[in-house]
Length: 304
Image (cartoon, rainbow, N blue to C red):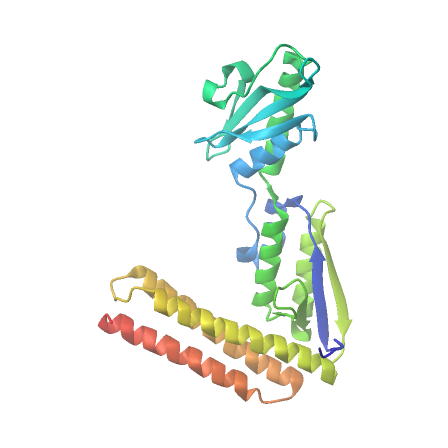
């Protein structure tokens, strides 16, 4: 394996993310730098409810159970029955949510029988007042979670922004990215927006570097891998499309493909300036992308 020392005119970027990102405030900050379309979406109503209900479920004492066929969960308490030394269970309450986030709660005895678990005699179960308090906690926490983003959603947003700024993944699996020097002023504003609106849970790291031969190898290796992957994906999308001028999905796919090819052409030209070399191999890959697009347009026009 060849060791590559990353020492380039640009910055390595990687991050550690949490699930407390304020979606609304982050979108406002990204809008201000022209990247609002890349902002992560807030939690769905069901995800918000699940996270809120988990907050009243201490491990080993309570757990959540899906309500089959419904958008919700039951909070189930568990106890050990001293007479049998076995775990026994009781539904304390359930909650379901509509698409608009409105939550409906039911006490355990109101839950339909198909959602009930085995309920033995009283074994110091939570009191009615305890459950009422938990329901209010869930209601308040769900409202908070409805404007938060999951870490996976935040990561996807950051990855899309890296791509938008012509950064590239240094590893095939992602996780570590290289940002060209020209993109750094904007990237720094992006990083600041994600950290400021992350509720203390987002950290974006940057390692500034300078160009050397080893870095050029690492960057070009990543760029070649990316362009080849894109070309293969375009061929796969073309092969999976049902061609025909009347198919609006095909038209949208062609427009997306054309825009992506333009982006890749610009990216290769930019990286040629960075490494001071003509990247003919990559240009050849992009010619193949152009050919796939051209054939797709022709096939759509004649209905092949």
